[in-house]
Length: 259
Ligand code: MN3
Image: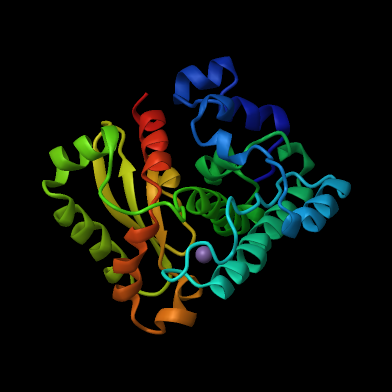
């Protein structure tokens, strides 16, 4: 289906379209702040400079800590390949898709994945996989921290207790989503359209945003996220991952999701 810019923007939520479809422009969405370019780390400076020079729409956000910062739970080499190769690849592929349809360049990654069905057919799958991959990983780096772990704090602790009972029960439910995802995907804690917490999983790089839910936190259960250290023991990785969860960032996302 050919779709021109005006038609697309109406679908997306210029005033008339927004009222009909209930769509929010990305700058009002909590996710958008994660997509803003931040100061490049030394490691990624070259890549970001190249992307900027090429006028790329999306860029790889730098890791907010060193590659080895999450050891022993996630090893340095895994982090380096995961960020510099895998995430960089999603950004590169997403930009290549959008380059084919420059009329889409004004849209955020969130808007793109929330409107997959309205995108030109030749890039729908690419945007689904790589736009989803870009958003998922941009969240993932932020919700982990070398100072993370321990029990949840703040409003998310209260909400988890109300929804799941004890923290151990929540961890079990979340990890179970990761264990039962056959093949590659993500385990999630989301806020649904009724502002309720839920655990779920998605295949591949699908985002809960594609189902109208807001991802509060998610764990990557692709083998590239754990195989160097944990080999086939996905369950051990899921258990260890709680030692690096950045509850401050999870709380920030939860506040935006329900706000
Ligand atoms: Mn990954």
